[in-house]
Amino acid sequence: MAEKEKKNFVLMEDGKDTNVVFSNAQPRGAALKAANRGFTDIKLRERGTKRVHVFEGKRVQVKAPIKRPKWLPDLVWKAVVAKKGVEHI
Image 1: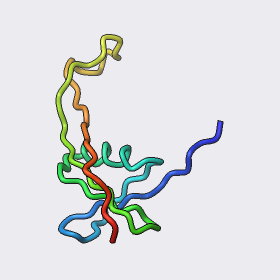
Image 2: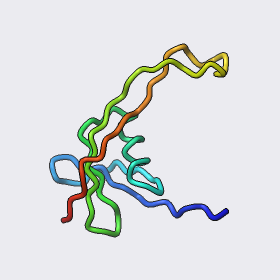
Image 3: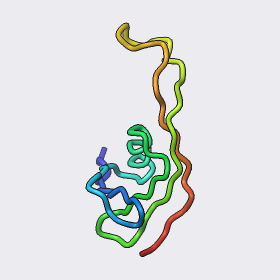
Image 4: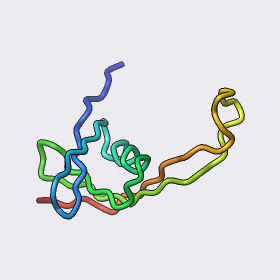
């Protein structure tokens, strides 16, 4: 089974690139990583293209799975994102 090629997505704030980069095959996966770090207004510029993927993200606490390791607490954080669109620069 061939593994998908990972892309690099640069987090943008105030219309400018930051030094935060997330790697994933899909922009949604990179947005989930950003949301898990606490970012809510997520704009990810795909390196090598002129596309900016726009997401809205948050973290919510949910119950851990029943078959969890003993060290995992009862409540865990889960990232949630919703895609708002794609901008072109």
